[in-house]
Length: 231
Length: 108
Image (tube, rainbow over all chains, first blue to last red; front, side, top):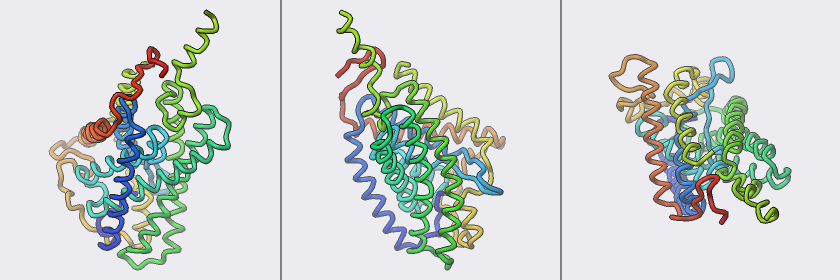
């Protein structure tokens, strides 16, 4: 999903850069509330995991692959504001060191892969948790759905940006259909990776999963609670 | 699982994915590249301005073995992202807030 240089014209690239800068600024303010001595290292590790997972292209259809975007995953693990920052750091490193994603398209890529995925994915995740039972299976299921939707949401956002500032004259309806079609398939891979990762962390350290913090008591609380009753 | 061990395990998974498993990743174009090629968008692509960087396209310049070059670039990338992201998050965190060390932690 990394947009290279030349796909989007200069004015829309600059506009997307401004939106990305505003989004990152909001995320920097919001992330203060999500990060403490416990969760700051986890957030760094989550960014590193997203980078690693983005290298793993999986086949989705003949001659086409996809890879994790990671916005939904990062938001569920470390919080939505920190999640935007995690993916943004990954995109910055990829653009500057790995020639992956154009430098002039960095704003576009942050909007598509850091901001839209978190808004769509984490928004759906929170909505689902309101109606689902409060247990680990529900968190895993909501993670699956959030990740699944985040990828076509990102593809739809690309189509919209392309309609505004695309450099080639292509019919937007056909572009939208093609982008959404393939990215629904990629979304299934995103959903599987996200659900497996979230449920793995939930199994060993549920207290560290931001998205589950209201549902699952910290393990030390569960262990300590019966002690006064027995004394 | 104590927190330090969990963090080390999480890092190890990322290093193995980027350093070893990445060699087996699909080389097919991703969804956007495929659609861009099919629809004639890709003709407008411009060269990456940092395309000949030492780590360009997930390989280490000067290392000829594909498995080693790609794996090494992945490990370096994981390290750089961890340092950049971890450093940023450590700076902007609320210092000292509810630090509990796994099972021995305090119930605040």
